[in-house]
Length: 140
Image (cartoon, rainbow, N blue to C red; front, top):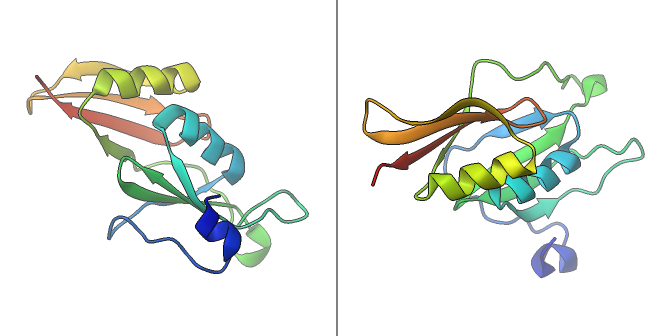
């Protein structure tokens, strides 16, 4: 946590995009640590874990945008049901750098980076928490 949230744990950091993904994962703190290694995430805020090791809120910054995470809380009507039917799209300039870092951190290659019909280089990775990430960069 940065100094702002440590000194005032109720002050929430700014959201860096108007529409943002809020993921439920099995292990939000572990996912945040993975996203730091794989995608260079910065932790903006973390609600301390409860007695079960879960947290209701993690706020990360990745590539100038916000991503929020939570553990499942089925006892409060918020179960984890898996990740299907969506991908997180990461638009970057240097796809090779981002790709290599994510794969080295443990992301699974789903679709290798290729030059696509729309003119950009694109590939897909799945993180250890089951989230599909599409990496997209302009071709040079």
